[in-house]
Image 1 (cartoon, protein in one colour):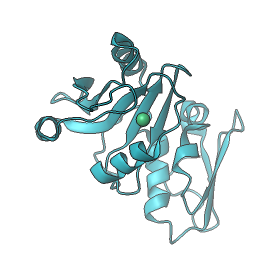
Image 2 (cartoon, rainbow, N blue to C red):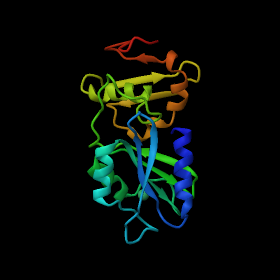
Image 3 (cartoon, rainbow, N blue to C red):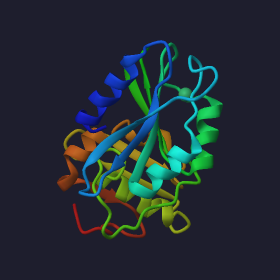
Image 4 (cartoon, helix red, strand yellow):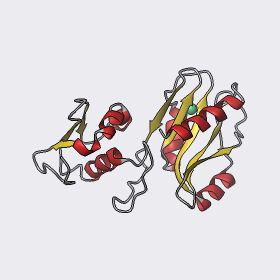
Length: 197
Ligand SMILES: [Zn+2]
C-alpha cells in the first residue's frame, strides 16, 4: 500500500479506537491518491460499519474509487463474511486496517471488473505492474491453465492456478514489484507476452 495512504488510514482508524472507521481511497481529478473519510452510520459501530448510500454515490460521481476501507478496532485483519459480501455488492476492492494486528489486508471481489490494460493509472498495490500481469492472465484464464512468475533475484514466486487466489496475490508482490524489469514469465503458450524478461 502507498505509504502516505497507509499513514492516513492508520490516523483515521486511531481517531476513535473503539469504533470502526470507514471511507474510500480515491484518485482525484489530478490523479492523486487521497482518502475520503466517511461517517460510520451503523447502529453498532464497534462491530461494523455502514456508509450512507447518498454519500457513496456523491463520491462515486466525483472521484475514481480505488477501494473501500474500514478498520477493525479489536479483531484481526481477516475479513468478515459481511465485509466480503459488501465488497461483492459494491463491486469494489476492500481494504481493512486492524488496530490489533497493526496490519492491512486487501480483497478483490469477483464482481470487480478488470480495468482496461491500456491507459490504466498506476496505483500502488491496486493497479501496479503486478496487477496488470495478474489481470492479463485472469482475463485470459481459459487460455492458460497455469502461470508461474518468478523474481530472478529474490526467487519470490507466484503460481496461478487459473488465477483464483486473489488474496495470496500480494504476499510476494512487493519483492517481485521491485524486480519488475527482471520478471520472467514461464508459460508454455507464451514465453514473453509483455516483452520483458
Ligand atoms: Zn470488517
